[in-house]
Length: 286
Image (cartoon, rainbow, N blue to C red; front, side):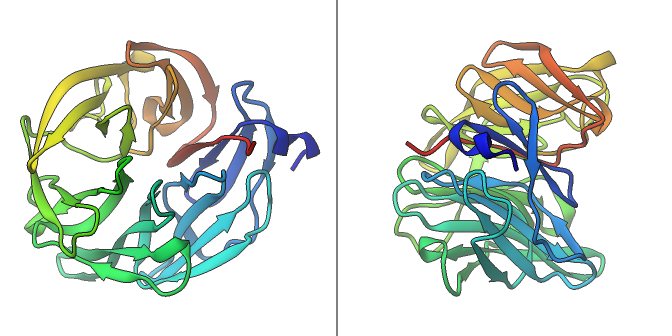
């Protein structure tokens, strides 16, 4: 890691096996993260208010793993948590510092199952949660009040349900959307839950749905279309909104792209030969 990296904002990009670190917004490679188990499959990324980065992982064919924590600009883990499932997505509660991880677990043919685990203060042994609406869990996002949203695959592979664990509650409730979407990546931004989707097809734009949540109902109030080369979008992967821009996977998962947000349209920057599965910005500590 370049010494000057710690002083600026950093973009972390996971390709599923390693994490590359870029200066942001310049996009110069400044380093990479090390210390992962050699058999680890890395999930998406999340960050806390201190700029620390969390990287969920799971071990091939075991569906258990670790969550690695890195300091802003650091290269080796400063903490490692045991995960009873295979970590896919994560989020840190801005009100408490609690860490939530969406897990898949060992398959019960023909479907996978999973859970959501929450670590108090991002430490120790987690509390495990499940919902009857989701078979295995992929993405997680806290809002600014400590409410947790998760999505994944529905029971018996039916749809892409969304669930909410309100702050202080002990169980999830099902959230109905005003329009059925193939939801994957989640992020809370400016008072709305943002749901990313490729529309169920690799041909066409990716979509960011801006969702207003109230009383277990989500109303889509705005949709941002993200166009990529030849309108060949990504199969999935994480998108990250940073101010007036959004960063995420581009055409056929072989590039990282940056678009204007919420305007969308064509990308304004591209990094070729990058296969982003996880994307997050760590702001420089002040």
